[in-house]
Length: 339
Length: 259
Image (cartoon, rainbow over all chains, first blue to last red; front, top):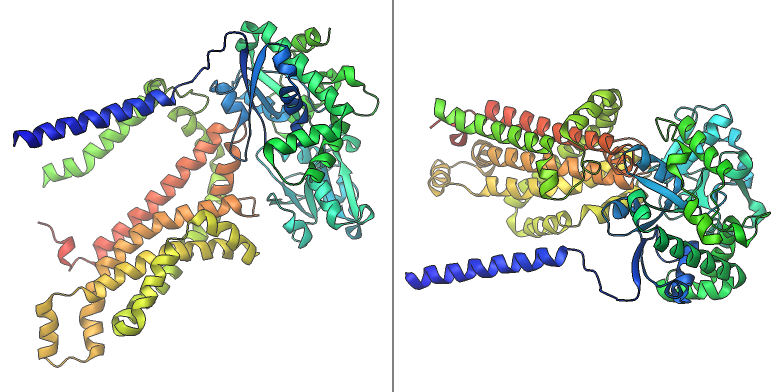
């Protein structure tokens, strides 16, 4: 009898100690490196050309030169950069600026410190045979979107063309394949200039596809940016500036050596094919350094396009209030980094 | 009697109220280091439900229709299989085994497939729900049809009852409580299956669609939670309806007799 009780107690002690070990393991583990400051970056997706600048800066040692040990966490469909940064899992997040706006309105104290994509890489693609060429042609058509905030750029496009986005267009949830477009279920598909569009070009001739470019339509909402918690930035001003400086160097290197950059990204992720990564990296560079810009403007927080994102976001229903640009963006860190 | 009512009704309600109060006070948030931004307070969820009720109801209907029709169809299929297996055990037993295997296919794997097989989102959801709910019915109904008191079966035999009579007068009535159990398991499975299916659907309405996408937008978290709570309310509502019918229709059965 006593032995049974004793066994029970031992069992309980073991269970509790196991739980304690598991719980303590859940806590943050900070590697105590004496020289290097540590920054974790939450990426938006798997390692691919879209984020080449970050991976190049890391593997070329640009971060280390600035005294930073950077870890880049891959993203996924249900990984939210915003929540990861809010929970201090990462200090820097990659996210669409339009998405960051919604979190700012929701009460998250984030600031955009680096606008990676200067233009919108968002395309809407239709088969040339459909005759759909501009935003106005979307009326009554089956249009695919990834939603989750991504639809508002299209809502803005519809509004600019005098359409009611909720009533005049038949929206469909688009998956991450292009099967729905190929099968004709979608008249118009969402495609990123640097990814899905390139994949489409493997099956279609360029002349077989009509592209609606959000920039030309005046509906561009800004996408990939780097955001941080305002409080963290204020406490780590120097670190953030160094991080941005190395990141700019990474993108500059990428723009000079896109093939090598693509190889670096491909080696890390083994994601899709090397050819696709090369094509993606080259295409991404067109939005990182668009025509008319030069390498010194990498990450520039252009007040015009940022204000346009805020205005269109408000008009299309992305945000309920017009966000104050001075509270949403802080360019002082970028300015210090390019000095 | 009165004390039983207190135990059955008042305590669970009290517990619910206490949990909601704890959430509202922010104590649970503090305990688990969750931020109010990430898990909105019950009051703001309630407010979001009130503000969006005109959108929630049509979206709920989009989800309820395939869930309920799928549940009924799945029940019909499951029960038919159970009947077949009981009538011809040698032939049918394999199909029951097959049923169990099909039911154990994860819904998350099934939903995207069904969406490709059936371009119509309603039928895609229907198919997922049928698969998810028919297994419980087949297994439960089979138990009800075959798990009979020995003496009763002997009585039927002694009175020279035909196979058909044994089915109609003994086996089928005996299976009814099991059928209700299967429905109770099935309704939650059906709602779950429909909502998951909507995650992968091309359709841009339904509770699952709204939950998936509003939670991703920073200023719509409380709306996402409003849809989650609505989905739970719908499930509980239908569960209660099934319980109501169970009490009404099975008054004669021993399981419903008051002690």
